[in-house]
Length: 161
Image 1 (cartoon, rainbow, N blue to C red):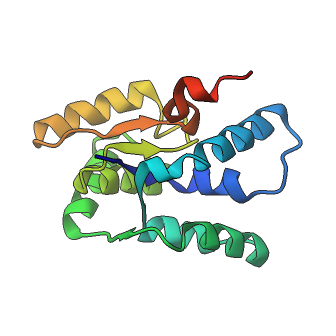
Image 2 (spheres, rainbow, N blue to C red):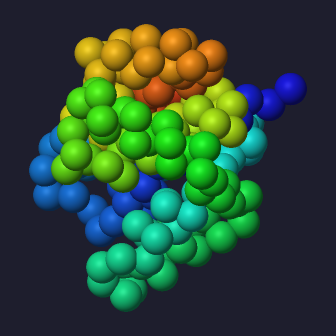
């Protein structure tokens, strides 16, 4: 059975962006493209939040982002999801300035997604924050999805040759 993956917006951004001039940005782009070639191994999901974020900014870039996710099922934001996100903010697990990040986590959690894939290592793929999120979610009877970067989900097959 295929595992489910919630694709957070940063992954779509790296996938569709112009080639980066920084080493780290170029590496993230290359790794994202390598993982993208294996996307058929998973059931992929995006949310209405991802859709809104992909629509923002430069029109041409937005069109590329939206085209890359056009065929994926869309997860809707429910009242339960908003409550989870609000709790993560109220308990200061996620800072208020990163409210959208709390919403991404709540979406993947509420829909029981196996993996939340992201390049956002400040507020989402951050081990200390994940530990606190997991403690909170456990207290309300929900498991935290595995949160990882495309590189981590790519595994050994993504190693340089």
